[in-house]
Length: 113
Length: 118
Image (cartoon, rainbow over all chains, first blue to last red; front, side, top):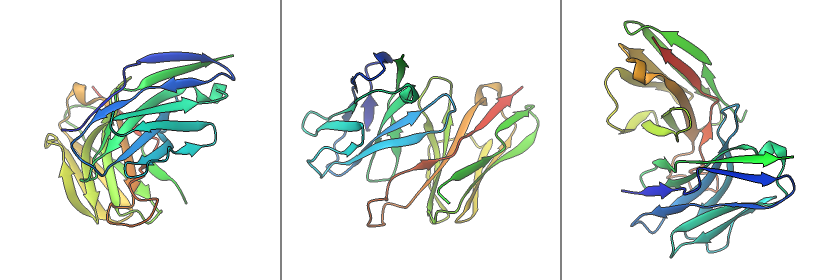
């Protein structure tokens, strides 16, 4: 069975600084998708970034980028120029070939002014 | 329309009540999902519908009964629930995995229905 592990339950960062959230996963599949979702206190789950396992190039979306290390089964999220609106719970997630989206335990990120 | 709409936003019910949660999307997605989320925990998958057919049931108790009447609607019927079933219920939709485009596999989530069972 696939598992997703986020080892940092809570993190904080000063506004305008950079923070990296860690995620590791375990799977025997070769084709899969990895995601970072953000859930603010408003509780709406929002997609931050997506990575296809067959692509070696790391995905980027504006201030958000990933470091995807397939051999190490690692998928970290870097947030540059952190903003107050980035305060949220961040979930790393894995989608298998069956279409099941499995979430890690989450990292609660606080951006401080 | 790029939203998944869930109603009601809040629901309080007794253990003998029958109620339903509703989810609607008009993005042409043919895969729809129900997740259960407890406070400070990740969402847990309950059901997946693909092309209006139930494709995944994560061993959910029969007091939860999903229904997909058409490609835009997903219901979750609730009956004889327990207090431990109190949670945020999230609906999501996506293009199914057999679709060959970059949007496949990306789930769009609704804002959830907060359920309290007394």
